Structure formats: structure tokens, C-alpha cells
Length: 98
Image (cartoon, rainbow, N blue to C red; front, top):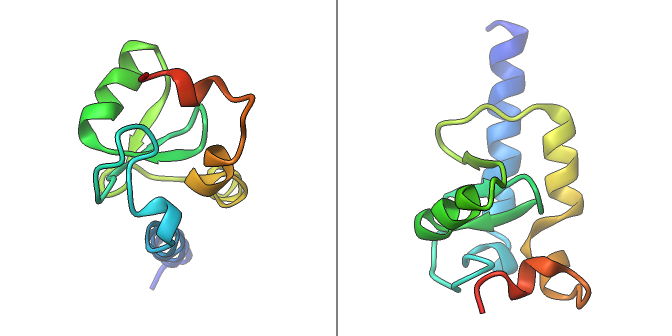
């Protein structure tokens, strides 16, 4: 198996693992279950509806199942995630949809 394919599979497993964490099982903005997008502006998991709103604000959004993620993005997502943003009082992200 080519090295690139193995790396892509490893990255997909990391993302799927992050989605299984309790704080990432729901959209950071509307709390709906099963987010399938990553807002790379804030490194959070969002649902389909909220991904569209983020795009309207010109935030970068990537599909978990369709997009390719690189190592830097995975590292940032591991350091971010919904749990980190939920506890950050100064983040504009929390007032985006109020």
C-alpha cells in the first residue's frame, strides 16, 4: 500500500476519533448531533446548516468525509476542537449565532 494512502487513512482515523469525543459529538453553534464539517477558522466541528453560515462569514469550512486534511490541520484540530472553544469566554465564535 502506498505511503500516501496509509497517511490519509491515519488522518481519517484521527478525525473520526476526535468526532467520538463527547464535546465534538454536537455542533459547536446549534448543538445538533453529528457534525460533519470542520470550521478551520476556529478548529471546531459544525453541522451542515452552520457550515453554510460560517461560509457566509468567509470562514473556511471542510467536510470531514470529502476533504483531505494535512498534518498541520490535524495538529491544529487536536489542539482545538469544540471542548476548547466552549470554555473560551473571549472567543467571538460563541456569539456568532446568538
